[in-house]
Image (cartoon, rainbow, N blue to C red):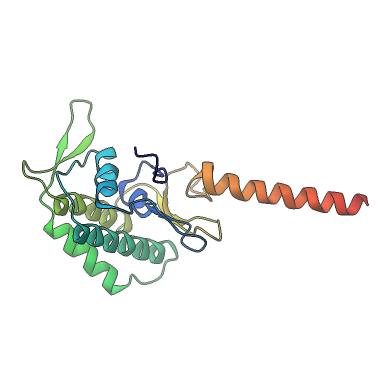
Length: 191
């Protein structure tokens, strides 16, 4: 990956990982797909290689990302899904022309058409989001406990009680802040 851009925050769930391309939404936001090329890099990590991406297509991808985030957040909070987000998800899903294929190892992969474009890749992401939000997969949608993040993530832990979108970033940051606060309290009470 290109060093001048922030690292991707990769996960095992395509749709919620895609929403993670914008992190720290309630703090100093970090855009992880600032250019069309960077979006192509992210898609390639998930096996959705596309030949090109224009600035307008990047805008479409970001609109899909925000619609997934909005709908997943509502679903995690058990609130009604915003109609505008549902429209974007359905529209992107309908426009995609990818097909699911089964590998010899028994895994599902997506195959984009021979002249696959970005719309096909966005259709795969939208279809994944629809399946998650509709409750078709084993797990639950949750929101990161970090007050600056609040990312929607898909919790597949055994107990379904995961608190952080990513333990290596949000979880560690919150634990470090709690530790430092405890250290300060200990220092003040020792004086």
